[in-house]
Amino acid sequence: MFSVAGRVACVTGASAGLGRVIATALADAGAHVVGVARRAEALSAWQDETTGATAAVAADLSNPDAMEEVATRLSSPFGGRVILGSAAGINPRLAADDVTAEGGRATLELNLGAPFFLAQALVPAMRAKGWGRIVTFASLQSFRAFPGGLAYGASKGGIAQLTRAMAEAWSKDGITANALAPGFFPTELTGPVFADPERAARNAAQTCAGRNGTLEDIVGPALFLCSDASAYVTGQVLAVDGGFTAK
Image 1 (cartoon, rainbow, N blue to C red):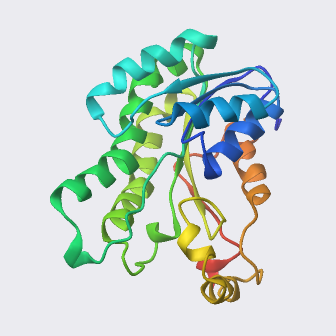
Image 2 (cartoon, rainbow, N blue to C red):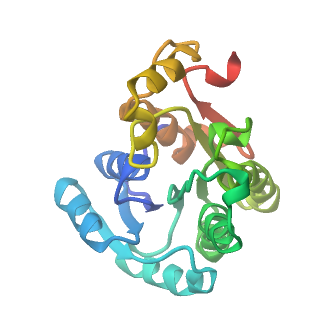
């Protein structure tokens, strides 16, 4: 029920952070994984360190006009796509007064636009098989406002609604759409948080579990949403946050 062996998965943001962890976990579990990220060298390093069947596509997902081309390139290594994990994202951490039109658009296009338009481009292959899994990345900021998080928070609030809307549109075709909302995990994106021990300790104290996340904590929930075990789960945002949003 929880197996992903033989499935084909595309994971964006596979060169670093939680995207890399999930791409590796899927490959270790027997899926054929296509990793997508902007940095070709980092993608190559991920492939070198990962066992199983993998392929890499270097692409800038912040350009919405590139989605069809990217989808075509994704189709070549292993055939039709059945799992899409969208982990690519940016967090500029700017005060509301400092957000520029260019920077705000870039954040929304990568964090919110890319997960939808890539899913839209890959759904026909999923629909043809009568099976698909779309896993987006929400955030604590899908639920709460954080300082310096206007553009990022808006994009992640949008992800929660996008996930519900995609579920409404495509679940009847055997395609589920769900989101993971990680708490505080040590990644490149959260580097400034974990670089401050006092701040990291305050975050940990706000969880029910009394600690911040480890990279391994995201693997089980991700595999659940990518497998047959979640066949009747769609349109949901699963917080993997140690109970941060419960307090």
